[in-house]
Length: 69
Image (cartoon, rainbow, N blue to C red):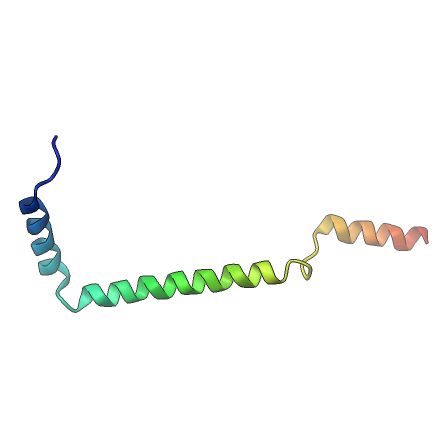
């Protein structure tokens, strides 16, 4: 179970190219990049607006404070 030689990697590359074709691989990589960008954008939006979401407990505490006061 030694390391793979250059011939192993060349054979794998040829098989991948035969299965997906030359045009499909860049298309797949573009889709992956778009997914990563949208994930980062979503994470940035979540960090930017943490104050707008309130938990059920905080709403209950606010209701109790209004009832007392």
